[in-house]
Length: 370
Length: 195
Image (cartoon, rainbow over all chains, first blue to last red; front, side, top):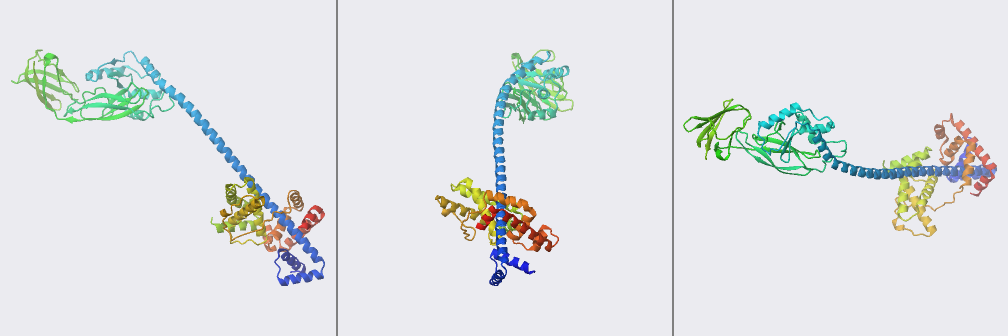
């Protein structure tokens, strides 16, 4: 270290108050011998103050910048919050207005739709008031004809078609209305359960708050026969009129629900807005005694059990003479009025036998009284 | 990040001349707490930053003078400086003092308040202009030697000088340049002589 460097070090330490006694004495001695030392000390101290103050000003500036940056950031956040709040309120307002308008439209739309459907219905679509006891295959045949003859309605939206298709046969307040649609497919039906009918004017789901509930009476069936039935008692929720469609376990739509075999059935309830609900019904089985008594003189008939197979009915008197006989088609229900093959009615005790094509047999007795 | 390492990081950044980073860290950590304390006790929101800035200067002075005890948590130290400064200000303004609420987390650091900074407004501008003349390099070099009290060997590495001799020569030149500027500016000279 040169003498000058040594002096600078002493001055530096002196300015910081870091000199030892010995070093202080040394500096004092130097000051006495060299008058320039004091000037160096003064300059250093002046420089020191200047640099330190400069540094502190820098610190202040940096802090100010940090503060301004934070204020700016806070302002941005505040603005974002305000804009976000305003946007949310505006959005909610628009949504409420839109929802209100849509609600009005959805209330009006279903009526319009029904009218449209009626107008667009082809002439040969039949509307029959038959109560809940259609005469078996008569209606079924008629329906099949309709299916062949009519094409689906094409002036509706595709989603509407989808729903219309699933309502192949519906009954409305005890009226069976046959819709001019093609045959149903299971996947279409399943889709319909989750997707409500969507008209071009219907933007919100009108079925959100709708709970359709129907109350049915179920008549059990005799063992291995088709004598069970489902009857509607009442329906609530949704918008009238309601449509019902009964499906068997294989999702085939049924038009006859008075001659059902034991098992599970599903009923699709659809209100006028297209809201749907599925209900499952079980037709129980019971063992029946095949002993029937009829009075054909007052119009009573004996109803043969319904089976999905060909059969031959024989009614014999107590002596074994054939009183009446007839072939039965699959699923045919014969309403026997007590007349013999000759056309006369004799009161008495008769035995009946129905021999089916699979060699199974149903037998019992029919008593004709006057 | 625990407190000790936070303190170490701040001190290291100051030592490395990374004041921007150190101050930003302190601002983010301490300023909201100070603001909450002061505003929560009826203090003026506008005063908070001035107090924080003064506390920061105080803290830097201590670090520069090697008087800061690194066992203290930096954030607690600056926070307490702010609170003390605010309480002193209240005393001066003869307002209410909530002494009971004050909790010292640093070992009874009490600093007599001195807000008589020599350079305010115009002087700040003069210093700024002066350093513009001598350049950033000289300012950095002189800050390292005088404020940070670093050894020439350290400065050589930090500033990338070719040798210690080159650094010393540059230091000498810068020192002389600043002194010449100070002597040629009577306003600053008078101010500095008065300190």
